Length: 106
Image 1: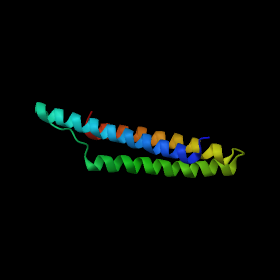
Image 2: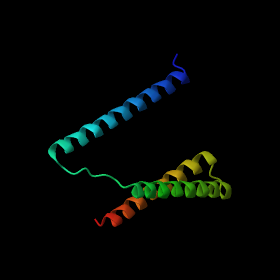
Image 3: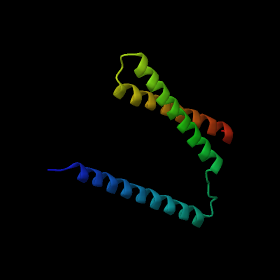
């Protein structure tokens, strides 16, 4: 019988292999750009910090709204928290995308 330890180990292995191939493909793409003489396009540190800040703030708002929903209505905690986190996290990603497009001037 497959236990929880085996499943956890399989998930960690799958995540590690996926991250390895993502890094490898990014490196190969960068090396191909350098060989062709193309400029390397990089994301600025401020853009990454802005994205993380917006997403974490929206997740915090999701926690607060999940607590308010579960406390003031008859919606169970196991429904209110994931749904509010998903909605607020998605809205945070959309806001981050719109702000980054406006900063780049697209």
